[in-house]
Image 1 (cartoon, rainbow, N blue to C red):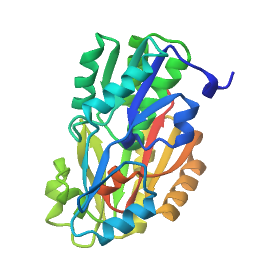
Image 2 (image 1 turned 60 degrees about the vertical axis):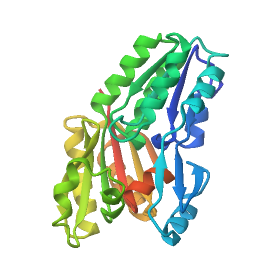
Image 3 (image 1 turned 90 degrees about the vertical axis):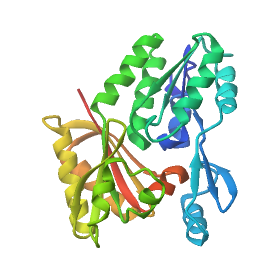
Length: 285
């Protein structure tokens, strides 16, 4: 039976910052709750605009877009619907240190008498997405909630992501700098790469020019793979598709790739990163 035909007894829920494409959500029976993005007083659900539309609007805006978590009510509605077809919900979300989404999910879960388990990915974008997919695969296999949460935790321990930004402006103005603050004063025209450690952004390196930053990205991926030769990868792009395709080709040439996803970042993620690229890495055990 194809996995997208399976109706697991435990429903998997995530949020739009996982950047999971519609076909992945359908294949693994995952429900995504969208965050919100506001530009010049007008609010959209994440995913409504194409990436190009979002950047066009952001470029013409008077001020930087703001983002906000889903409401408690949005989660209540999703959980109630999911529990019509499933006995339990496992809800996997963006780091609680980067968004209030976990708080909304927890508040909603309290209304369902232990039938909803909320899990903090301590990450975002496809580093969150890979954890969600692992949880969904476990649900399709028929595993109980505790085992699904353990599968997600195992993926959380293994997954790594590097983010290359053309500028730190959005990240700084949006207040998501975390441990990156020390990089800001000495950036000049250098490119910066970041990762997420303990749920917050952390600087990796400064390099001069995009070519050197891309080469450094590949070296970092190799370091995270360690002795592993097989793994799943996602290369993300924010108006950087050509660079993302090059990275995907280079990664595919170096490793035994079990999955390779090439994904545009959503509006909420892009609002905080601006243009750039990222590579999420899930080494095979």
